Every structure is written in C-alpha cells, then in structure tokens.
Image (cartoon, rainbow, N blue to C red):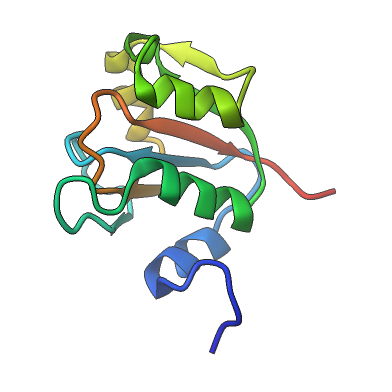
Length: 127
C-alpha cells in the first residue's frame, strides 16, 4: 500500500512511463479526447474532481518544466489557478491546444466544468 501521493493505479502507471519532454494533458470534462492517447478518466460528476486538485496532485508527484494553456483562458478562474503554479506559462489558441493534445503521452480528464480549465504540461527531470 502506498503511503501517500497519487493513489489511482492507472494514473500512477501513466506517470511512471513518462520521460523528459513528454506531454501530459490535464483537461476539464469537455475537452475532446484525441484517439489513440492513453486516458485516465477521473471525472465523476461536474466539478469532481476539480482541475486544480488534480493539477496539484500531479505537481506533487512529477516534474514539469512548462505549462501551456489556451489564450482564451485569460481572465478566467482557470488562468488564475495556472498563474499561481506557472507564472511563466505559455499560451496558444484553444484550437492549437486541442491539436497538441493528440501528441500527449497521457490525457487526464477531470470533472472540472470551468471554461478553459485545460493545460498541457511538458515533463522535466528532477536533476
């Protein structure tokens, strides 16, 4: 039994397979899931689990060197959540973010129902 950290077995397995430069998408419940990308679907009902809770759990378990979000998120609660964690995040159009998600090594779907609560995280290394 794990002592702490992420307990979801599928999410742990997905994180364990990641390497430097790999993309991880943390998505609200509405972002289209691209075909062929491994998905860990955590969504239970609207709002559960929250985007920010899943994001914080991932940040506690893995190293990410960059965050990419949709320009359309600017001024939203999602942008505030990301700004607190990634002050230097990069933005692209929402359409470009959806296109980028097709190259992800892992797609994590949350129950978040806040507009544009999506992020593409680029894996870093701890050394």
